[in-house]
Image (cartoon, rainbow, N blue to C red; front, side):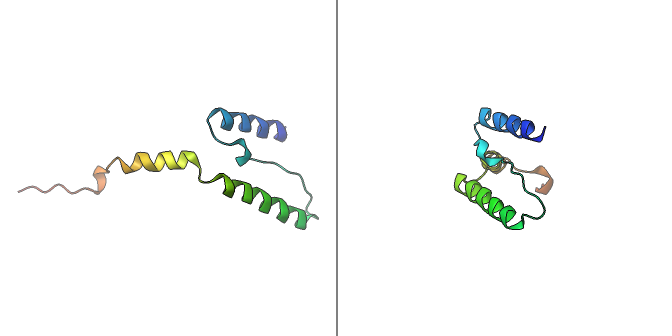
Length: 77
């Protein structure tokens, strides 16, 4: 079931224009600490090579164009 869900998320990411490599799944037991470390490092390197999350970049650019009224003080004379 989990593998099916991961595959589904990959399809959603791909259709949204985001690299599906950003989500991965692997199996290891509690006795495989070294393998776990290697897999986490491998996946981390893949994500680092892909660069920043494109959704966060778009969100940040949208926020730059807007000003928050809650932080602005209106001066009246």
